[in-house]
Amino acid sequence: GAGVSQSPRYKVAKRGQDVALRCDPISGHVSLFWYQQALGQGPEFLTYFQNEAQLDKSGLPSDRFFAERPEGSVSTLKIQRTQQEDSAVYLCASSLASWGNEQFFGPGTRLTVL
Amino acid sequence: AQRVTQPEKLLSVFKGAPVELKCNYSYSGSPELFWYVQYSRQRLQLLLRHISRESIKGFTADLNKGETSFHLKKPFAQEEDSAMYYCALSFTGNQFYFGTGTSLTVIP
Image (cartoon, rainbow over all chains, first blue to last red; front, top):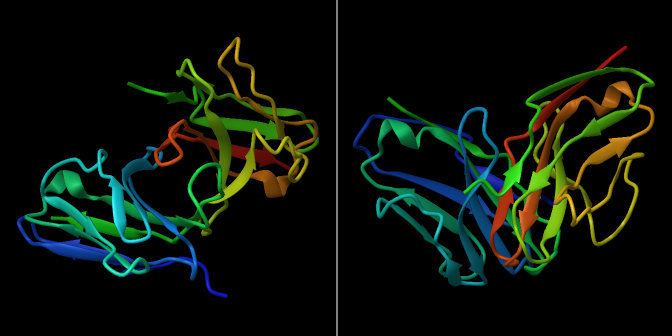
């Protein structure tokens, strides 16, 4: 079947706009992760879901960042009042379970805030 | 605090030469360690993890708890090994910490 998909692939926003980034994990995958990858850096953990429960959101950089996964499948990462420092690639990954399991990554959404 | 350090941003080796990509971590317990790879225009994918002790595409990595290292090695580099390599650590099962990555170029 299809792998993890993310949409949109590219997003340009004006500073102050709200954006919503979507992730469709692999069907049946329990765990879902969001990462932020700034230019020249490795992915940085943002948040983790097990089914619909957000078990860890310690990596979210501010209260402008919000993630949800209401039915335990598709997830949305929302950024309110975007700032230039939010410009990055946002990666979504899913895995069958959590501990020690391979994460399958999506292609990412490149967000540019002008 | 930086939990995973990859000291080389860029590494070039000739085809057929041995290659070693360094990874050091800071954690006193028993972490899970991984190497992820991203080939050009492809998505990030798992290369290997220390618990499986596998050799994938000729690559191996040994966890050295004394030196807190998990270096990736291959005895004979191939051109198709050119990619971005990320070392990653997990100790909660939920959070994964990635290094800044090493870009490997294998020169024909």
